[in-house]
Amino acid sequence: MYPFHWVPCEGRRHASLDEHPHGRSYPTGPEVTTLCGQELVAENSEFGWFWDTCPTCYEEALRLAGIPAR
Image (cartoon, rainbow, N blue to C red):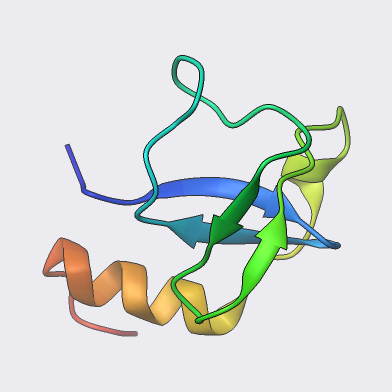
């Protein structure tokens, strides 16, 4: 398992190293620190998982997972 988790925030899917406050996914409302260095409010909405992925979070997630960037 990887140390980061994906979370929809402010129109994009971001990754975070923060612990989940409840179970496996972030609920709507808590502030999370993202891998791109922002403090954003989680939005676990029905549509949030369809948003584009933050490119900076994606690159950092690849690095943390030990996967070469494309």
